[in-house]
Length: 145
Image (cartoon, rainbow, N blue to C red; front, side, top):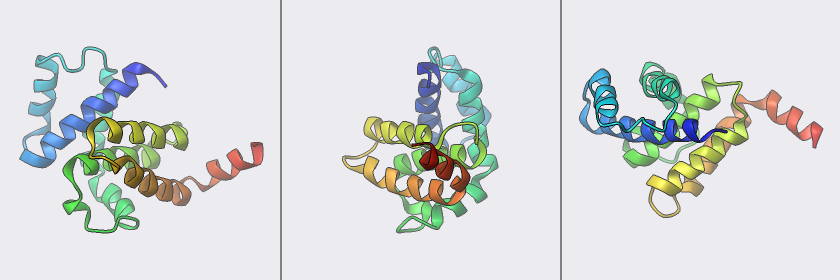
């Protein structure tokens, strides 16, 4: 787990939040982040993957989330929604990233950007997605412990 990748996630949360709130063109938002040097200490390629990967796979991501959230995805707090979408993206499409790393990083993002206690909500939702989508990895981890 690198600081540059963590910073890429932080920037992606902010960029996705902006996209969700404004509907602004992704490339314009990305250019703004580059121009204002918000990606200076971030892994730019990972930021790019997350920021563009979430909208491209939005239907599948929101479908995975909707199975476990307590309300329609589009009315979840926008900060929490951005964090959940990034976490779900990583659980669904970054199978080389351990599920525990994904969940831990998402919890830390919620503690950084979310409302008090939102990290518990995020943890609960992403853990359920991991239990469903990462069954083989979870069983292997348990067997090794």
